[in-house]
Amino acid sequence: MVDVSCIIINFNTSKYTIDCIDSILKNSTKQLSIEIVVVDNASEINDFKNLKRHINDLNGQVRLVRSKQNIGFGAGNMLGVQYCEACKYYAFINNDTLQVSDNCLYELKSFMENHPDVAVCSPQMLDEDKNFRVTIDHFSSIQREILRRPLLEFLFPKTYLDRKKRYDTPTKVHYIQGSFMFIDAKDFNQIGGFDTNLFLYYEESDVCRRLLKEKKKYTYLIPELEYIHYKGASTSKNILIKIEQKLSLLYYIRKHYGWFQHKILLFYYIFRYFFTSIIKPKYWKLFFILLGGAPISKSLKQRQKINQLQSETI
Image 1 (cartoon, one colour):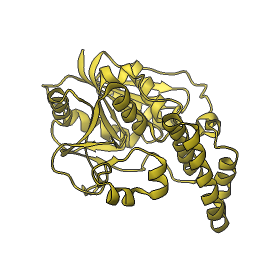
Image 2 (tube, helix red, strand yellow):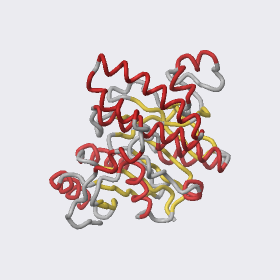
Image 3 (cartoon, one colour):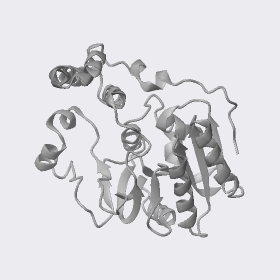
């Protein structure tokens, strides 16, 4: 059994993935047994070949799995899980990240072993200039979406921690960003892992919430450990991504709060984006999807084509 199985997803950004792999290998101690599984989410063939060449040069230190279809964040990570050896912990790491702290994975493992009530933890995220970047967030809810985070943090500071504060000790939070999630493998497996109905957003919030609800285990930020995240490098911003975010959010609300609260939030967004669309016409597409009930069938997941090239595994 290995200590940590690291899972990385590549989608047309092999340069970031290669740097991420090298960063993990460079900053890992021999005290820790690790494996790295890279899932290529049906990238363009040249990007995949570039990644494959580098991994071949690592002489078996990294396993590469090529999906025939872009299956998204949650399903991509779950595909990676299927190729992992038996392990004590999973480290789900975005490909556009770099390890900063020496022996980061070993230190996270030590923290988890000393805190059996914790299921998920993460280092502090930094930007490419090593400046502070928000790493924690509050579980999504009608209150958060309508009243907004700053007001909730002001009114209920114990429940809604200040996301923009630089903490100096391990801190219990609602959830941490999905760019670096260190998770107890047994707990993760027992709740069924990531919800693969979610294509791009809210997977980390959903899994942390389920671990809290089903396993009574917590999520922690470990601020003395750090990593760099080139945020957004692997996801372009456009109206389709905005639509995907709202579809995922409404799915999440229905799943965790029920039909009534889902409808309240849906009607709020219909009202809000009607007026937004008058000023910014590109939002009419989102408005009409909301008006139709914002079904998850409108997700980008349903628009991914299957690559006829044979799936390749290294």
